[in-house]
Length: 341
Image (cartoon, rainbow, N blue to C red; front, side):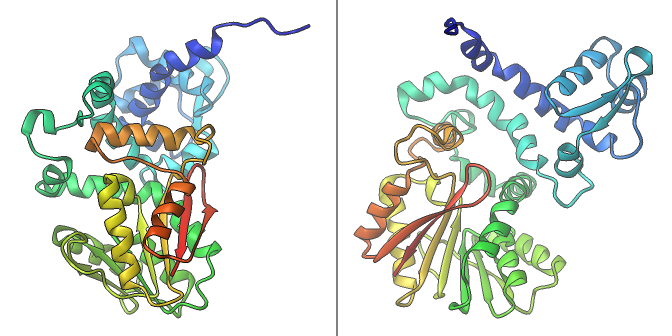
C-alpha cells in the first residue's frame, strides 16, 4: 500500500530549532562535562547544574530521546550517562572536545539566524555589524577573548578534517607546507606529526601569532612548525610546496576567492598543490545540506561570502592556470578541493 503524503518532514524541519537549542543549551551549561564520571540521577545532575526543578526531567529526557544521553531506569530511580559520542566530543575535559563551535553557535549564530529573512532580502550580514558598524573580522580581532573563542571553535570542529587530510593526502613528494589563515596552527601541526619530513608554516594576522605559537609548543613540534604573521590580501604568501586553506575561501566574494587562488599559484613551485578544506557542495547542489546551510551562514556573517561546488573550484583554479583539480572527501560534509600547478 502506497504511503500517504503527510506533513511530518515539514514539521520536523520547521520545529527543528527546538532540538537544536536543547543541545546548544546542554553544551553551554556544561551538562556533558558534569556527566564525565558515574551515572547521576535527575536530582543530582540538576543540582550540579543549578537548574530549576520544573525543567530538569523534561530537559534530560529530551536529550535521551535525541540520542544524546543514555538513561537506565525510570522515575526517581533513573540514572543518566553520556553516550559514547557525547562523552568523547562534548566533555570539556577531553582533547577531542568540539563544543567550542556549538558554544559560539549558541552565543552568536542562534540569534543572528533569526534575521535570515532580512539577509535574504538585503544581501547584508546580520551579525554584530548591525549594531557596531564594524565588520565581523574587525570586531573579532579587536577583542582578544572573542578571538580565542572563535579560534578554539574553528579548531575543534576542523580537527577531524586536518587529521584525515594528513592521513589521506600523499605528502611524500613534498617538503614544505604553508597553512594560510592557519589560526591556532592545528593543520600544520597534524601534517608535521604525521609526516616527519615536512617543515610547516602557520600564516595568519599578527594577533593570532601568539595563539599559534602556544599551540605549536603544546604539541612539541616547534622544531618543524613555525607561526608567521602576515595579511594574505596585502602580503605575498610564503613559498611552499603545499599551500592549504581551511575554511578561508568561503569567507569572501568571488573576486577575492580568485585573488587568493592566484596568490597561492604564484607561491607554489611546479607540481605544487593548493589544498582547500571546506564543506564543498555537490555539483548538483542537492545532497550536501550542511554545505548549503553554511553558505547561508556566510550571508548572515559576511554578506557576500559563499560556499561552492567542486566544479566551481575547478573553474576558478583553471583560470589561475592550475593544470588539474580533484575533490577528496574528509569527515562528514567536508572535503579537500585540491589543485595541482
